[in-house]
Image (tube, rainbow, N blue to C red; front, side, top):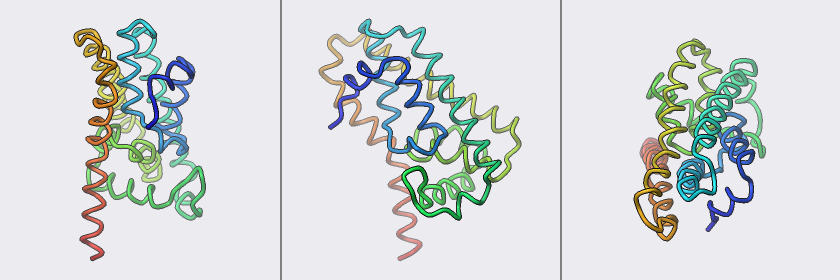
Length: 197
């Protein structure tokens, strides 16, 4: 199992920015464990390894910037993306699932997708492909960025401040975060199986 504490200590502030930015809109970070990284960054800030007043604006800006680049990639490249074969940078099946997710949840998908791996990478692109009004996209993206990009690291910071030796429980907490974040994907997979079966 990967160790988010060592990863964050290794990559530092610039690495955190890069990971969040890539996962949020470049279609290359869909395999990054974003939720657990954000929470762990907050815990490390509570222990003095990082500065929470740098971590939070850094993550928030990376998330918003990444999403906006993803939106404009979708807007400019459009449906051409869906004609490409699978590659390291693009998974057609993930984009199709994001399209279904966006159709089901509408504008709120921009916020909800923040908490779902893969969806947070592809939903901004799909919003651009669907030519969602930019001002509307940006509004929901800011809300999602606040709830996810500020909420998760702050939760880690707060819990790290009130629970002594939280690092002992960190892997268990991260396991719960990952499990909760993939539940919507499992639900979508079960629904897809029922439709095809």
